[in-house]
Each structure stands twice: as structure tokens, then as C-alpha cells.
Image (cartoon, rainbow, N blue to C red; front, side):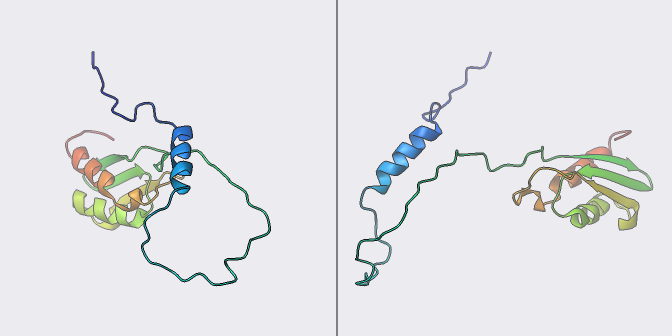
Length: 136
């Protein structure tokens, strides 16, 4: 059995983070660059103020960063989630040593890449593995 050390933030939650942020916002902070305050800005403001809070969510992809490849001697077909399908196709073609027109790349149309899926590395790794596997 594995005994995990959850670390000092094991029980940290959104309420604790918001409490600490609010407390920090009420203190004086470091001044990166002083600005002159205009006389107009020093007058009391009128109007509405609203505090909106959203939970902290993972900034992560919704589907696994992976690929399935079916490599044959004269063709290659890939199923993956990517933001750059043409790049996946061209890099997979290089890895498979095939012309680009012999590589079919199918894109999963779901989830969010948030920049991580700009790299074709998962598809290229899957092509390299597929060279040693009989089937997808």
C-alpha cells in the first residue's frame, strides 16, 4: 500500500484562498511605480460595486493528451486531439517515413487544449510505438 504525503496544502480549498486574498488586498502592498493621483480621482465615487467570485478550476485539457495510430507499410492513420492537425500530419509523416498524403489525421472535436495541444509530440510518440505493434 502507498502512503501518500499530501503536503502542506492537502486541505486547502477555495474558501481559504478567497479569505487570504481578501485579507491581503486590504493591506498596503509593494509599489512598483508611483503614479500621481489627479484631483478628480480623489473625490468620493458614486455608483455600484459588486464582488464576483468564481471557484478555482483546473486550467487543463478535458481529454487525455494522447493519440492512437494505425501504421501500415504504405499508410498511417491517427486519431488525436490537437489544435494543429496539419502539423500532426506532417510530423507523423516524418516519423513514419511516409509522404504526407499517405497520413490521415483525425481530430477529436471536443475539449480544450489551452495551448498544450500545439505540439504534435503525442502523435509522433504514438507513430514510433506503432512501428513495433501489429495493429492500431
